[in-house]
Length: 264
Image: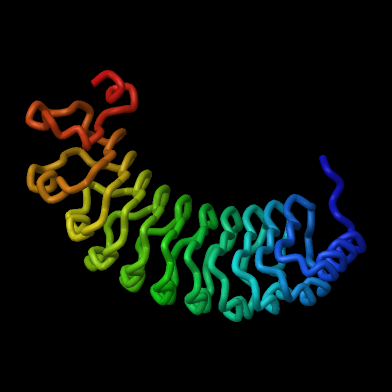
């Protein structure tokens, strides 16, 4: 196992990055438990990698990095975001997956330049409605949490193209889901849906829908017709074990198991 970086080594590393006006600071996999205030002086930094450390307390120092466009905090032990994170007005990518946050602050919704937000496996039970203000967001990963519902405000993300809600506790979607007019990919695998939500027919750009390992036992003809614009509908490992004869030609629907579809 690599020896954790000592604080004096961290300061020396940061001093060097600052003197060279580095735009990328990579402090991943360093065994860090804290970040020193020397980081505040790295004003030219655009990309900051702090993933795969042992950070317990949110590093407030990074909030002074006004040029930051990408912040990676994955695989730490953070329970909250640093206060003042909304000051990172240029941030386009925020990835903080695999941290035990449980809850998110409302001021995440003030990061209006965000294009990508990754919050996978963070023990989240709910999503703040303020995320609906992230009108430039294109990718949102919320898989492997404890979410039972998403707020209607999230459906105001009219630039969103990729949405991952897999491995949660969801049974239904907001009635205004159709407002996600640019959504191409939706992953609802490993939730608690008893049917394919008919509201999905209102998504004009949707191409791929994954809803494996739920509790779906049938796919009515009117639902098939409503979703016939899809290129890919994956309902494998639900209660539909074999492809009915009347589905002949509907090759975009995958049922049964992986092995069943290989043999078709």
